[in-house]
Image (cartoon, rainbow over all chains, first blue to last red; front, side, top):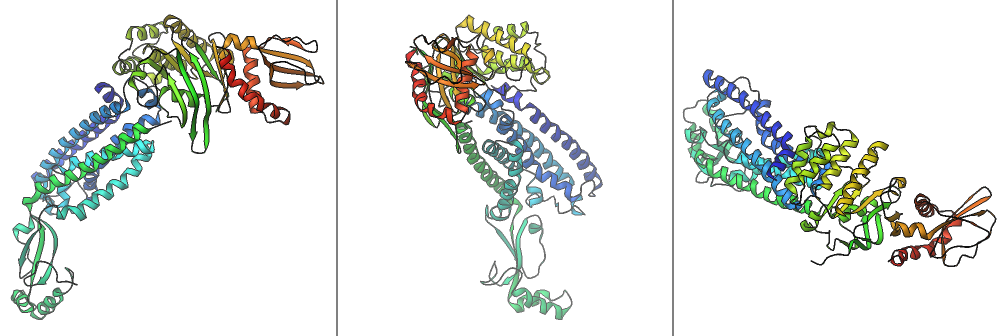
Length: 308
Length: 313
């Protein structure tokens, strides 16, 4: 049964492995070159998005073809009239393709981990938003455990949509917006709160080293004694104008701190420190694996209930 | 598990697709060991019926029993004992023939690899060939081999020879017949080409307009139907115990197909023994036509046909 699952899915799995090997070679070459020269080249901002899209595309392609690919060629009617249950058939297919996909991504993320470190110095110049600081989304989304979660989620999303829609192309096409929506939702709304938010306050808006290596969620002038804007105000309004008018009058950096004292305000950074990296990675992977589990249920039910 | 005396038994079986019925009120009984032909026009519900028997489609209404078991759920015990050939003849086109056989071997405990290899060897189909590169006839042979190697007790074949050239048709039927005789396998095979079936079948099920028109032993079907040929103006004749199935007037001649248990002796009519094809056509014609002359006979025909199956036992 393992052989059957592998053989049926072999073209897609080999294509996925091939694509990742080619990308891996390109990453190695550019990583070494950029690490050596410490200048950002070869990669434009658009190219980096390929890396962000990869787990989703990989998972969706393998997932969408898993069940719907068979339905497209009617081979599910052949498979389901052999001497195994549909559930067993599905379990082996999911397991084999899922393990291969997870291995591909584990290899890729290890490589990306190295690549991110290798190019982090080069990334400071002209890297199109790629910072190389791993708690920040640009690197966070490429490294660690979360990538595995994204891939498994995309894989199950493709499988579930394929089993329901019964057409691989449509399953993939409808999976893309769903995947992007879930990724953005988690990244912008959930991830900042998955671990306790740290704050750093000073009288002037100057990044300290600890904040620089963290992921800044919010920053701005707030009333002294607070770590967030006063009720009815936001990070960018309110006390900032007081400070600005004072600073304009001084026209010199000396004494800006004085302005903050006079206005009774201070500058606060809310951020996730670098030390929260693994906590956030683990929590994010758990969220995506949880969603994948729900989709597994959908796939099993759709396959078991399928009727011509 | 009780030993079944019938291979397939359905009662009031129906399948509803969104708004239309794919099959309606289907009741028949197929005894073990028969080679049964399921005939009817396209869209009559043949594929729908076979899919429900094979367990890949769920009935909307009615009861169905296959080898004494229900095919409704994922019944592995039943799946081991039946084989099903879909009308699309699905195979993995990228597989080699040998890989297709391995697929069968890994998924079926009763798989007979020697038999499969021997079949394909006799047909000169190399195990190294890609399925997608084989001719239509060869692909059909591989698909049939996949079924036969399961050593099924019941073989369900949906249009196994459709779209094949006459030579490939005959080859396939030959392979089928040979294996069936060896094992005593019950076969239910659908076709809309009746001519192919007479030589191999001993049981007939006629399906038309989503309903069973007739289900009976071939011998009894042939013996109990008569073709009456007479002048077009001859009046409705007194035929005791005979049911008129169809009536066709061509020029000055009128041809009537009747079902009667007793011999018909009437000087006004010339009595001819019909072929199976003529009988099948008569049933299909009657159902598909909606002319005013034919309509009135439908009412009394319906129940009589369902009973025919009971009478034959």
